[in-house]
Length: 175
Image (cartoon, rainbow, N blue to C red; front, side):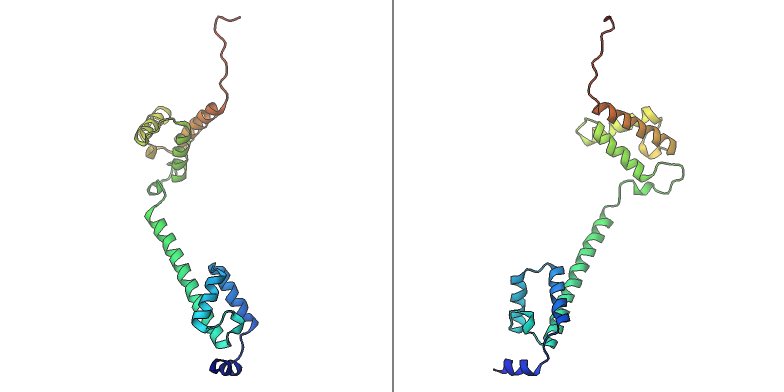
């Protein structure tokens, strides 16, 4: 009875508040059952239309606090992830005339595609031997901008050769 008397004297919720509640609920991906349970436990109603203007204001504030916490947590996780794992070869950036980190990552990716060695250590040793043969340097870190082009072209040729069907060779004695 007291609730009904309070409801008659309190201003009803506005359409804008209802929209804001539902937009926030949708953004937070809160299912309908959870939403109605929160309304019931906190305000004793099952629909936002039964809230007063002040109750709606408080509910919106609570939802927006939850949204800010969710956003903060998401950003924190993203920041931790990017801080933990810097991009490979990022320490080799800003070297004029030398291969850039994206070029070095491209070489590694292309090598993984054309190489058949399954063990990572053996694969990296094979890559170093390949780079020594093509560019004349002992490691990818020492590739300059001209040498990196040679290595990438050689890897592209290897990729193309691997994708072409095996050509049948004629014996030398054949007429």
